[in-house]
Image (tube, rainbow, N blue to C red; front, top):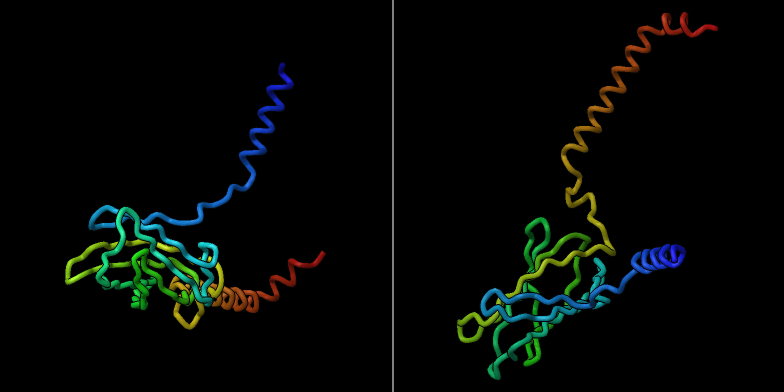
Length: 176
């Protein structure tokens, strides 16, 4: 009986440690009507920085009206740079194509209006973890790293000067 319990525990642990498939799409809540939209992002719901990504908001609980609503889609990066992205609107949802310039966190904002009235407002944070990383040209090096490098250089120079000035004492105590 005891062996069966140990075997069951080991099998349960092994099964729980196996990789699980990730949910393929994200449900985004509407801030106006509390309806939802399923956000599909291709490729594989894990876009690659530097490559074109296709984004589609499938509106749930209601379809878009017969009259063509206006969709404003903006993407804001982690440095607060905002880009308006052209969209294609049909009754099933809103689609857009965008090339994320580098890895990082992006805020996706979609506002759907008709006749000046706001129908839906969706907001989602999208992490880009594959592809092009941030470059030094964007000033992504933190100030503390530059100060630390300067401090290390100065400390090395002081140690070299002290060692040079005390070279006779060092030589005297270094003999065996």
